[in-house]
Amino acid sequence: RGNLDGIEGEFRKLYQECDGEFDEQVTTTWVAVYTTPLEGIYSRSPKKMRDTLGRRWTKVDYHAFVALKTSDRFFWSIEKQQNGIYINMKENLGEVVDKFGLSNRKPPILCEKKTSETRCSMDQLIAILGEEENNYNATYNSCHHLSKRLFDKIALKDTWEFTRPPEYICMVIISILSTIIAAFYFRDKI
Image 1 (cartoon, rainbow, N blue to C red):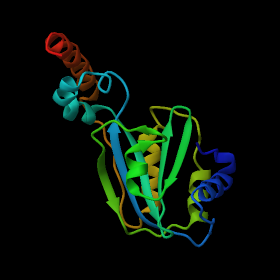
Image 2 (image 1 turned 120 degrees about the vertical axis):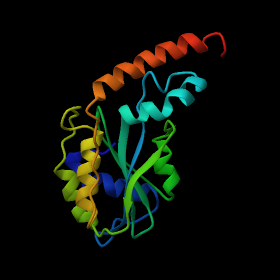
Image 3 (image 1 turned 30 degrees about the vertical axis):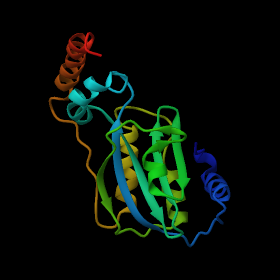
């Protein structure tokens, strides 16, 4: 987990863990926003229910995070959780996209937007992250907001827009009711 008061120290620590050397000349070469279903009713449902509800649920409520590649060929994920901002660095993309720490992310994991038109130095990335607050607020400082701000500042010519459809509240209620109905329907078939 990244401590934003000592973000440069966190970056250095991550580099050392991967036998790398912190180099301010390293730049980003690729950035993407990924989404995955949030924990909750959907992800705790039996597989048949997840398959039935999956596409509808991820349109309603999902977790977003940024993945990026640096010129020294490391991959990073940066994301906001309720208890802070987490930074992960590995030698291959799958390790930061498919996993959060040691845990597997819930499928489907979707790449929403990506670009290789980026040139952000590590110093610039540290400064961008230094502007962020650790506190979480679903209305204005969630994983979606952090992902948008990071993507928009790192990408040269592109932006990522996250939207919730106007009927968001109705979709949440319908999804919950669908889950209850599906649970009732599938309870004898599981």
